[in-house]
Amino acid sequence: MGMQMKAHEKCIEIVSIWSRIKIYFFSILFGAVVIFDRLSRWALRPKTFFALQQRDKPPHFLVDNSLGQHSYVKLNGVKLHYVESGPKNKPLILMLHGFPDCWISWRHQIAPLSSHFRVVALDLKGYGDSDKPMQRRGYRVPVLLKELRDFITALGASSCVIIGHDIGALLGWLLAYSYPGLVKKFVAISCPHPNIYWEVLPHGVQFGKRWVYFSQLPGLPEIDVLREDLTDITQCYAHEKSNGDGKMNALEAYKYSFSRREDWSGPINYFRNLLYVRVRLTPLPGKVEESWDDESWKGGQVLLITGGEDKRASLESIVRSTEFLPPEARAMVRVVAGAKHFPHQEFPDQVNNYLLDFLHVQCSPEKEKVQCSNGEGLHKRLVNRVLESSWVSSTVRYGNQVLDAAKKGTVGIGHDDSSLSRISNGYIHTGKA
Image (tube, rainbow, N blue to C red; front, side, top):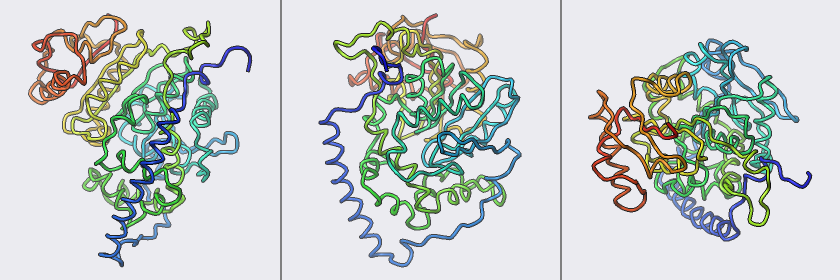
């Protein structure tokens, strides 16, 4: 390995022993709570509680080639499935879905983006039509990141744009820090920075902190998610109920993709590994390497998108995430009014416009920028002036949310209260002028 650690080895760290003990304790505690709750429900509805419709044939939606070509690549014995669209000589965009999801998460984005880029929507390992190793060790974070790097290389690219949602964006964060130079631009949808992701995850929401603790138990979570004909999928994709039927029924496509216990083991194993990982933002004490600054991620251009009604990734957590970006980074925050945890599915046209604007234009001339000093976080320097937009009425509350957080002391803003009256068009810009 040599005298100096490689970037991908030195930027990832495991949480402290005390943090691990707390995770183990709460896993047992909330595991007992969930088990008691499920037994109570089973006693009330014994015939329907474990009812599960058999789904043997994939919906046309999953195998349709209209969105792109279905392809496979095998890396270190693991087969990965992906859908590709757009000219191969164009810059690569790699799209990483969240949990519980698969490549179809990006069905609304593939066509608009592929007009300008080579777009690849990947089924992460353990998901969809990719291989599904059952062992937890197959989903260790360094293994996952190396496989993603090797996948990008196998596509013939030396760098790419990463667009991730939820857990996919969490991997995107870690990939950018681990392999500087690999990620040219990064878009995180509904996903705070890894160093606060688990801290800010609420307890009382679907797949929230209580469930994450429960997921650490072996075997039980995989059984639990199958109950009542995949009711967790039905609830998670409630926004899909009225969107399409027959060939384009996304909800049924999701239920097919997660209809067996083995369809859940891999995805849940992500939580059994990612929960213990953080980003090391500075060198280890006493081990300062000359190459740290040269090899560390410089941040580049980052776009953070969140739904205005997302209970799992609040605006405050997204804003706080900018504090962890390198000083050289240019970050933008976009808030999708009315959207919850899947803004790219709930309001695809709006999100697509945000993506195209971010990927094609560094600073749109029709929008006012917030001029910020170098090295400070966005939540310390949110707004210097009121931005003009026809969307003001629908976004005032987002500025007020951050302002309220500042007054409570949870977010510090280096400006008078009067300077943060509105965040217009769901748009916040930070970075050097």
